Image (cartoon, rainbow, N blue to C red; front, side, top):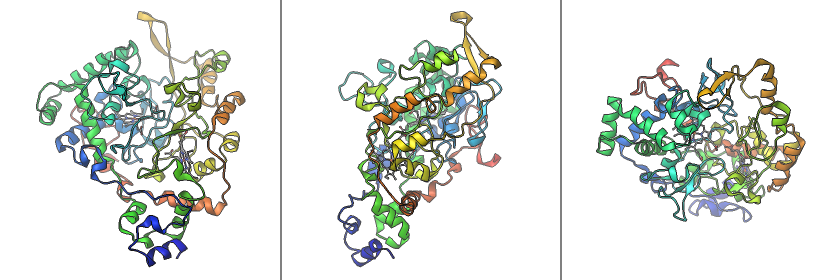
Length: 483
Ligand code: HEC
Ligand code: HEC
């Protein structure tokens, strides 16, 4: 038995925090009902409506992808990919690829896990926190967001506001201009029309009309209501506070955790200083930090670098400058939100662009961020078998397969930032995580601790996926019975 757990057994009436060595920080209190939206208990009618909407491709412009495709409850609420393949893709998880009709490219960031996403403590969503409460009271919606003044009133939480956005992303759910009216509204910066078109689709389906009426007491369907229902569902479905670590914080059954886990806790909350960012019950400070994380894939098109554009002929810029693009503060360059670590063992690949496919890899990155960035060898991205690009303008606008002669030039975007010394130097220079030295054994102990953050009840939540959805469209992802 380790020193810590032995100690703990001897003084089990004292709080667990008191058991830790003096230099360790404070251990968190696990989350309780009141820490979640609706005090953890939204109206069941709202939850069920949200569940249907979450898995129904009806919310995508071309009716071919649902929230659940990228946030699959049997895949750690992700898609097992470093970078998602959105609308136009086919298949699920690691088998997903660009479908026959082709895709315009990859989703530029890793699909974020949704565990405990209904915790009230969240104060910014997305890797760069571009959706936040509007403390200054500028927008009637109550939120700062990429939709600015277009975001309507009536969204009952930050999480509900988030649900307004995936449907507006051409590469995620909306599709491309000209393919469907939702995508065209998006492309013409008419988000309110896009939301209305989707609400109209829903109200054209009898089962949905009835479900909305039961949940909201009125037969008028709006996308704001859909977003409120999606939030209620996510808050309940992905609530997870039953990991061995949290159980132990609650009941003081110290022997539940192995010696290695205790040694990992000791490091995490002590010498390794992980809790200076991964703090509190969700193991995040909700803040933004630059930790020299490598960029994989095409990025968000931030930055002013035009080297790819000049070299390839594709009019694209490729960097992902993270939080900087929201605040335009220099110290936010290449900063990303500290992720929650609850269930982290289920949520790989890790990092905002899925740069690491092992927990050990991402932990080691933290020990020597700049050296790790320099030595980074890249990660496997699924092959895009068919890619399309926009040609022409206005009424002549169409999407065509990328000319095979230009395909190599297109594909170079996947590793452009990684292999460009000037661009990786910018990421390295922005780093604000101090290197530390840990032995291989200690790295193993940290990984053992991270693995003790997995809630057994979350290993596979296929049961959340309905057998069918009200639109009658093929389910995304497929239901349990057909796997
Ligand atoms: C094509 C894949 C894809 C689809 C479809 C998709 N998402 Fe996501 N989701 C992502 C990615 C990628 C991010 C991170 C985006 C970023 O930071 O720019 C994300 C972020 C989120 C977040 C923010 C989490 C956080 O910690 O900040 C929530 C919540 C979410 N998605 C819910 C949804 C809902 C609800 C839907 C359906 C309406 C949906 N997603 C559809 C890929 C997807
Ligand atoms: C300076 C703040 C900071 C410190 C200290 C820190 N982290 Fe992180 N950590 C982050 C940020 C920010 C990210 C996400 C970076 C990104 O995606 O670009 C992250 C990502 C991670 C991830 C990947 C999670 C995911 O969902 O992708 C793990 C695992 C992790 N950290 C573990 C640790 C461990 C273990 C330590 C201590 C050795 C530690 N962190 C110390 C800020 C920090």
